Amino acid sequence: MINPPIEDVLDKAGNRFTLVVLAARRARQINAYFNQLGEGLGTYAPPQVTSLSRKPLSISLEEIAEGKVEVDTATED
Image 1 (tube, rainbow, N blue to C red):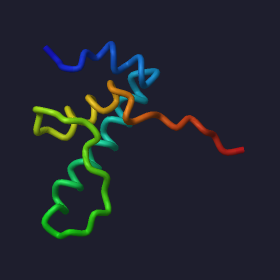
Image 2: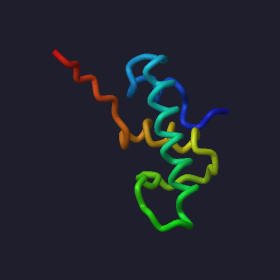
Image 3: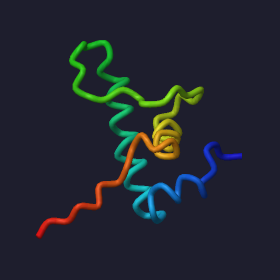
Image 4: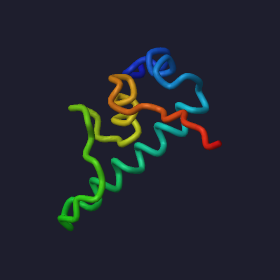
């Protein structure tokens, strides 16, 4: 079983295409954060949830489900 349920995460993101892009971008940020820990730079935001998972994509989906990461739907005019 996938945790969190995809239906819950889809409600937060709007549609599945937005969810894929949002989760992938946040997973890359989380991965970059873990990779730069030893360097002491601190340019990336740490995970915003406490997770038992070690996979960046699972952590990003948990963040979206809890509302810690949101979609910015602002458009340029």
